[in-house]
Amino acid sequence: MNAIMKSARATVGAAALAVAMAGGLTIVSAPPAAAQVGIDLWVREAPPPPRQEVIPPPPEPGHVWVGGHWAWHDRWDWVEGHYAAPPHPRAHWVPGHWRTGPDGRHLWVEGHWR
Image (cartoon, rainbow, N blue to C red):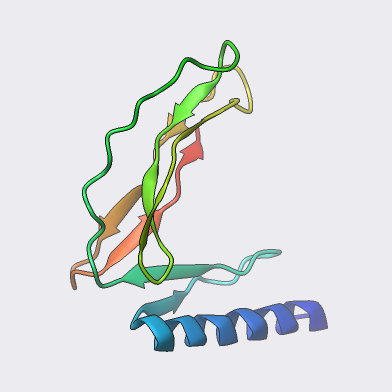
């Protein structure tokens, strides 16, 4: 592991510990990847029910609505939905969602293009 990766992992580890101590959250490090350092953030409090959004017309043909969702930032904050351009013509959006673990904690699973 090179010095940059070691430094990045140490910085992410320290930040994760600070967040966990401040918010009572559990941090689970993801397995290391070649050029990526990831953190899974487990939240003990369930997210509120999704909000109803008024979906405006798309800004351009082919754009896809990416619905809003609740995000955890030491409290629940609503992230507004928006339109996005698919990376290729046959791509479709798989929405993100909160997954509940067997211990009752909640993990955000990012939306992605498929």
